[in-house]
Amino acid sequence: MSSVRPLIADDKNQWLPLWHGYLVFYKTDLSDEQTELTWQRLLDTKYNLHCLVVEVDGKIQGLTHYSFQTSTWASKNYCYLEDLFTAPASRGQGLGRELIEAVKEIAVNEGSSRLYWNTDVTNETARKLYDSYSLESGKVQYRISLDPSDY
Image (tube, rainbow, N blue to C red):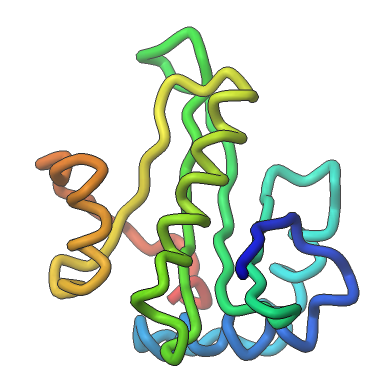
């Protein structure tokens, strides 16, 4: 049986391998300092970065990070689901959907008018799940790196 809950400080040893797996999947290498900064931000209740984890039999098998943003186009905030990752061995069990649904419920309770996320066009497996919620937005994302250490 699985359950979704907020991240706690004692989760670091289980969160870290999933975080690294996520970075490997996206062919990204972040410094240990950035990973530690992310971890500290996730635990800081005053910082606008949140994490949910999904457990199966007491072991964390997935994570999602999300935040809220104001919008010039809406009177209510938007909720941005930034990262979603499940352990490869636990895929196909509906854990990704459980995490999305949990963030969706939080966003509704926070008064958000939209929940959104991005993924690579080549992430076909995840896109099957995402397409079950909504078709892709048709938007194209552009990035200008302002800090060489960002990517």
